[in-house]
Image 1 (cartoon, helix red, strand yellow):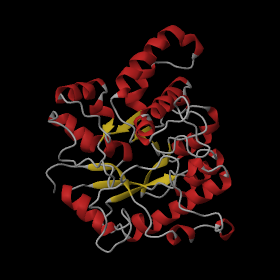
Image 2 (cartoon, helix red, strand yellow):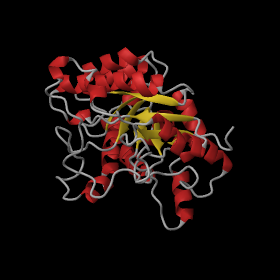
Image 3 (cartoon, helix red, strand yellow):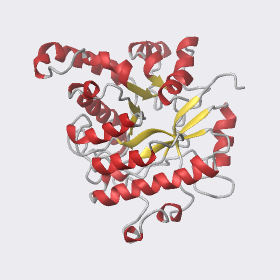
Length: 348
């Protein structure tokens, strides 16, 4: 038994080769198929840890035994929440976007959640394309009864803020199967997805720094559109979008609510009061002020003890080791961040 119980809520895996995905696509899509990427904002140095290449030469994040060695065994991790990244929200042909999402779900069920998962450590995410809400809902219904899937996953990059009514079929399906809806940063402004900033940044550093703007846009939309009143059991997970922006955003939103509450009469509480019941945030990348006391204060203001879940972002270059990701935390806060919040959310 490890000294500290840990659930890692953001671990990226991929296929060993494109054929692993292609074989799950209907033949009519084969000429269109390509492994998607963020071609407009490519990483200027390197995306992954330089030591993350498996000894057998397979692509980074494709070898289950090497991942176990570097992550699960090294840190005594109890469960790993897997996130595959097909980047389908950027695709304008919505039928193909959903078909590609479906192929990734077939692949991960066969491999990481199937033949690679003898010990049950790996838990999966149902990938969907939010530009096709009805197709996304069908995909959730297809896999919602599989116990190895613990959430629904899409990109933060989208055509509209996630509180708007066109996404309701997705949330209805999430509620039917008691699955959280998670969004991961990274497809904003790519393909048909819209940027939350004013125009297009010049550099990767601008684009990546402003990922938190997308999360703020989606969260405010979900709150003021009354999604959590309409779907009172829905949970939302914000993955890899930072943490420190949350308290000040909610202060501002609550202040605006006091003045403009007549515009949103469906809200029964202040916007900030929905967070603990409905929203969870993963820890990586955790902003790191020079003075560690400031970080602890920020975590307290963000109600981290109840809403924050540890994530390493393995195998990426800015991987957060469970041993070094946080300064000294109160024991109760540490236990909840590293284990209890995710255990409760994902029912592990």
